[in-house]
Length: 256
Image (cartoon, rainbow, N blue to C red; front, top):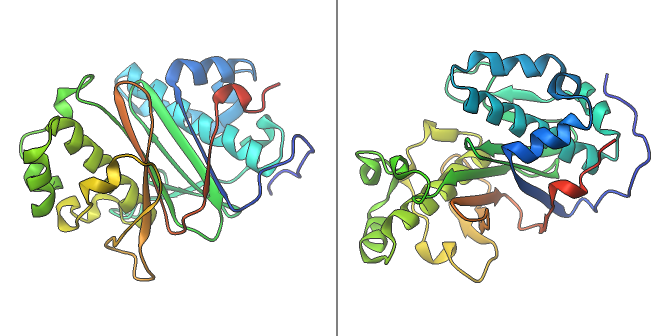
């Protein structure tokens, strides 16, 4: 059973997609005000123990905590009450329920992480939602792995990359966009990113939604919007409706 709502500040209208990015350290500090990860996440916190690298474990905890803090704001409940909110997961590749796309019965939710930065988003329950954040080339040239263009880029995108002033930056922006779109479709990387086209024009200013025909979604386009993730990262939102977008700051999420 999920916890009853407890009045806090008024939630945003459901026509909004709310998202935020935050450093792993900032989320840890925010959660410390609430008694730590175990108190906020409950048994979910034990998932971090499956990672060998402490940085990966810390990023996992931060991403899951950030999503619950955002849900607390959107559902108008006390932060610690979100420990009782059921967030299920589904992996389109293997069907296992302990990892993969997060789901909540009252909102569409999505999250993403690098070792330094985490991202979470919440939207109305009737849409499909995906977000992705990637380390930019200034932080990780390894993001451009051998065979990247063949695996990720459609032919038209390769031409745009070849003509770009910063080709690796465009490569990672395209990869982030496709990750977000495929997350929204619920198929993840079971679909080859190179199998569909994202126009490079949709990744630059002015910011806004661009419809993209995405494999796995037969009901119409998925809308794509690149968002600012600060120096060193690129990030994308994808949603099956071009909702109003509200960017939040972790300092404005509910605390004690």
